[in-house]
Every structure is written in structure tokens, then in C-alpha cells.
Length: 305
Image 1 (tube, rainbow, N blue to C red):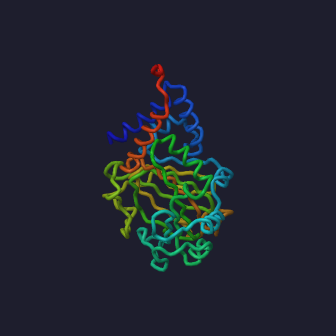
Image 2: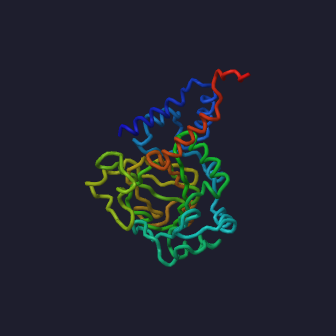
Image 3: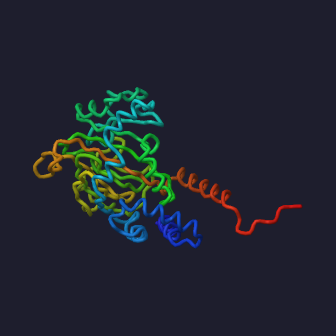
């Protein structure tokens, strides 16, 4: 879309900014997000993949462990007033393959218990925790770099699914681009370009609110452009509007995927870059205005007598 092209152009322009301070800031943000970019230069990623084509990266398990551990969930639940299906500290337990329907056994507003991961996995449900950038210091630090690079509001969610699911999530799309960081276990991904262009509004996303789609629906999606099994330390970039489906079982045998990690639950972070969100746009403009106010003019006027 024209808006996307302008956004990519503005990001690329920042990488070649004339201001030394801006150039230093852009270079620092670029270096910080390199684990997401599959060995590409920041400019190449923006021109060849951003909102255009998916990308698989392998920064390594050590990098992923430094960012997040599944043990962090218990600590966050003890430290923060996390609640089910409420804004700020929102958690939800999904029924796998249901089009993201919440399991009603976990009531709206109830406190998230410290052992929620074990409880949800025992019930063969997927546990989701929103806004880890608020509650996890390592995730928060990395998210600041993502925001600085893309100049867009960024939210990080956690998805924990039991092993052996032939369908963890049925095909769906998001109105924003997403980087998936596999932190533990494994998950199979199938990414399909949309049949009608790579642009959608949040209200028009398909495959959510109980809508279960088929990956063979050619009216909505093309054949997969990427089919891959993510293991700890792998990163997958999914452009906005691209359909994607997941499983934690091997497609051929139905057994848990992942080799040495077979049987382990899948834990993955989704780093959502909301470049086309109206709220995010206003935050970006406000941040730009504050930066301008904090930057002294190059030739300040003399003090009045």
C-alpha cells in the first residue's frame, strides 16, 4: 500500500540520516534488532521483507534464553496483579484450533495463579500472556530497541502450548507484522501470502473470534511460502495480513516435534510491530514532538538583555 511504502522509505531514510546524533541512534537500534533479521542488513530487510515477505532467522538458543525463560511466568504472576481477560496484565487460556476462543473455565477478572502454565498444559490448553514488555526487564529492553528501529508501538505476548497438538492455531491473519521468537520446545509454522494483497484493518482480520479457516481456502490465502519447525533460538518474521497456522506435532507422524525437545511444551514470544495502528501513530507523533522539544536549535537566539 502507499502508506506502507512511505513508512519503509522513512525508516530507510533514518538509516542514512545526516544528523550525527540521529545516525548514531539509528545505528544502535539497527545493531540491537539484528537477531531478528536473518543476517541481512537493516536496509535490505526493510526493502526486501518488511510487510512483503516472511523470513526465518536463527540467532541461537543462548540469545533466546537471555531474553526470556518460561520460569519467568511464575515470578511475574507473584509480583504483578495479572488478570484473565482484563486490560493491563491480561492473560487468556485458549482452546487450541478454535479460532482463539477463550476457555470459560478461566473467568474474566480472576487472578492469574503462579502455577498457571502447569495448569493450562495439563488441561491441553494454550496459555497467553500479553504485554511482557511491561513485566519482563529483558523483554522491555529489547522492545525499546525494536520501537526505536521501526518507530512504531510494539507489544510482546507469550504463547505456551502443550506438545503434540496437530492444530495449535488454525489459519489466521494479523493487522500488524510479527516476529516470533521460539524460547522453548518447538512449533511448526505454515505461512501463506494473502490472496488479495498484504493490507488489512484490525476489524477485518480473518481467522479470529471463533472463525476457523481451512489452509486450502484459495479465496483467502495462497499456498504456503514458508513451512518450518521452530526450535529454541529460531525467529520467524510474518508480515501483516499473511495467514499463518501452527502445530506442536509432526505433520507426518502426529508425534511431538523437536527432536531432543520432543514432549516439551512450546513457549514462544510474539513481537508485534503495530506500524499501521492509529493509536501507535499518535504515540509515534507524540514521541517525535517530544524529541524536537528536547533538541536545542542549531543556532539558539542570544539571551535577551
